[in-house]
Image 1 (cartoon, rainbow, N blue to C red):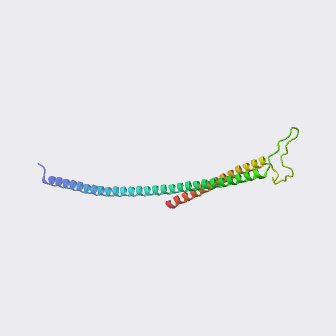
Image 2 (image 1 turned 90 degrees about the vertical axis):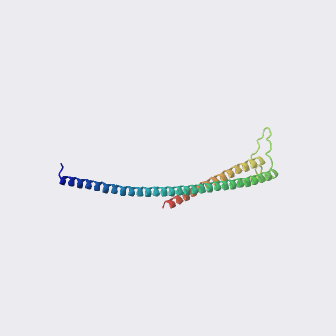
Image 3 (image 1 turned 30 degrees about the horizontal axis):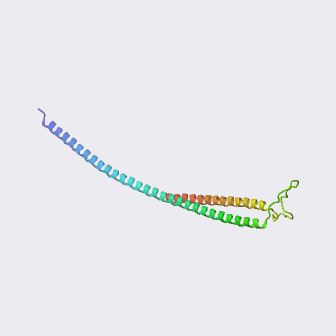
Length: 178
């Protein structure tokens, strides 16, 4: 038989082990509840961050589209102004050509032994004595040069508009980051 003090001692050891197990189980339950709370807070933070990112992306896209539309509008306006300037220039050239046809004479045909003179008699350095063909050629050449200048100015204007829009776009993005 087992002495009583050993039975009592065994019961105390068993009770201590049971108490320790219960304390550890309670601690794990508390830790598990804390972990669940932390996980819920983490999920809420991630959702909030994703919402902020989505709002930021939508705002960036809105700014991009606004900038793009501004550039398209400026390009269309520049094209319209270029076309108007070219039409005005072409009308001026047509009027000048009509005036030349009325006021200038055609170059005389050279005789067999005689060369035609490049300018009319009494001509000066102003072009006042040019023959009709020469005047028409020069007005056509001037019209082409005018068109090149107008198109160049349109390109400069579009470049400067795009450069300014890009700077404004970058500044708006930097303003959102701050």
